Length: 220
Image (cartoon, rainbow, N blue to C red; front, side, top):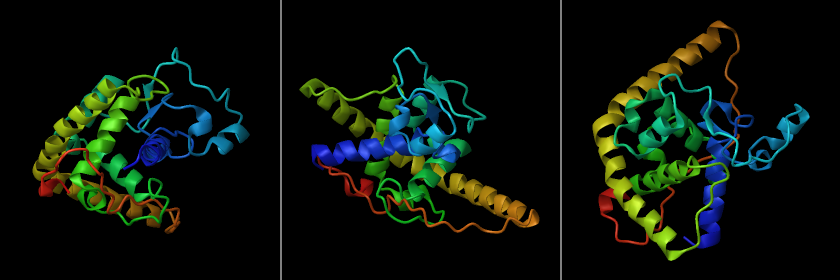
């Protein structure tokens, strides 16, 4: 993957998971990126939100979706862990976000296992980028060889962790997510809301990372 493609991928990833106005259902944290770079920034201006800049003096804080996690550090630790799938809020947020189609600017995917939406290597890379983004507001990677080597090393560490997470925890994570989806749909029907089928699309389906090292076939 070329540098421009990688930069676009990271920009869309940040937009997808750090836009409290545009994507509140799976926004992981706030004050991570500038408002003008968030999805739904035009709507935020209409609502009268303040200045669009995010300064380094502003604290990154968790979004309201979290009931279990209490700190940004806990979220970062979870993103790097082989037990993320045991957190139902994290599994649902990542799954729904990548199913939305925003990353690839394509159509919406019906709910499915996260392992069907992303390869192991791709999920490891994207979880790593989310971890980096939470280090400080408006984070960007350095251009040095050392910075690049650090990213590659972390990615290589993350891949087997994600593989273990899927092997050990995804059956239970998917079962719980499916149950919650069915409960939400039942509640909507009871309230007479019906289904809002909006092809607002984002599918990272089939997306594969071109790793700068040889990957075991099981991670693809």
